[in-house]
Image 1: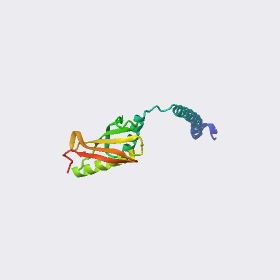
Image 2: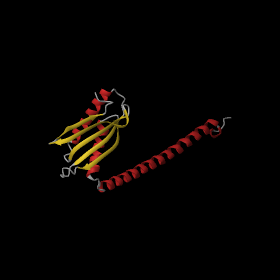
Image 3: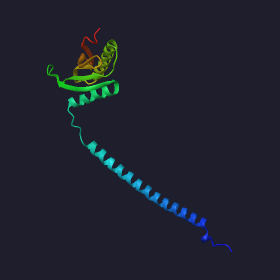
Image 4: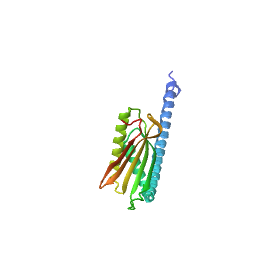
Length: 180
């Protein structure tokens, strides 16, 4: 005599797995719906935050705007350089509303004195040329520290003055450790 189908062990095993699959699918659908709702909520919050940020005017002074421009140029174009400080002062000598920019930088590369000197000059010229696009900057003086050659003191200084739409070198000074 044959056993009824519900008394066979493999039927119960199939039924058990079928229940697991159904339960897992139901849970997965609920989880997927929760994930979609959560993503929509986050998107709405982000949109509201962005709208709030766009409505808030930036109250940066011109000095702070210039500092951000200098920092942007350094971040994008000038490598292996640490910014110690960026000072921006009104040029009271000219009384025309222009500014003097005084970046204090540290070059973090261990090179020979000649290579260091050439790189500092190249980087300084590049920064001054980029700052020439800001028409209200009349002077730029860049101070460089190079710890590999001279610890805790300026190793070089480059001064530039605006002439028409360009920055022209006024002075280039090197400490004796990197001077020819």
